[in-house]
Length: 280
Image 1 (cartoon, helix red, strand yellow):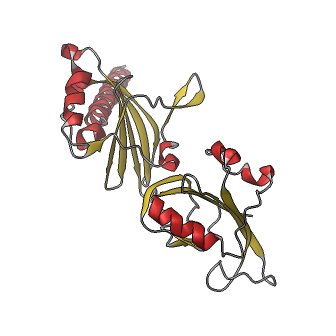
Image 2: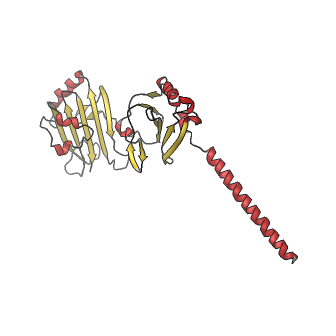
Image 3: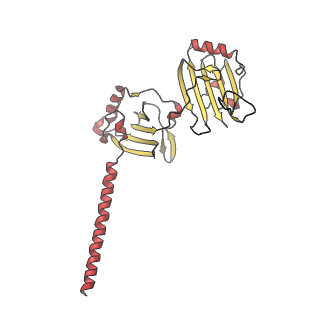
């Protein structure tokens, strides 16, 4: 009888130890999670405190890519977003200069299960190291993007016999990936001043690959972000297939495999070059 009582007592003690151990483990885990709370917003050279952030959403996070959205508290002490805006105006790391479009398209939110582009009305931009960030003053939101491979667009010296130098503005809408095959799309526009534009027009008038005959609209549809090309009144056009070579893709050899094509439009009135490269 005593042995049975001892067994019951041992079982009760064992259960108490197990329960206590589980509760303690849960408590320690929760403390660890709290200690690991996301604070990347504190790395952006702004005095943003914990109390300035209502909540955040992590959309993606791994060893090479992070993307998250913070909601800035719009009522803490009544002036959180105004306080941050004053910092933005006096901070060399932040500016009003928009990122290239191919980077802007990486910023989004998921609203009611649908991927939605961000509001672009009142934004400040940060680009330092591997980090891109945007603060939306109107909606009191902070977008944070860290990507180890985001800057892989080509820095062309020449495009379709046009030397790319002394441009006044450039926009990048899409860039090829880094795969071995270099698959994908390059989509750029370049704006030139009057002097440079005059030289380009003179060279295009002598070129064998450019002419003034407008390309078919089915080809020009590739410029999805620049519908103004359909209204070009004074321009040059180029369509060129790209073939696999041992050195430069520009050395066309019809005996080799076709790997893509290039499309160029030059607006002589606005001095803008529209360029598109696509692999097939």
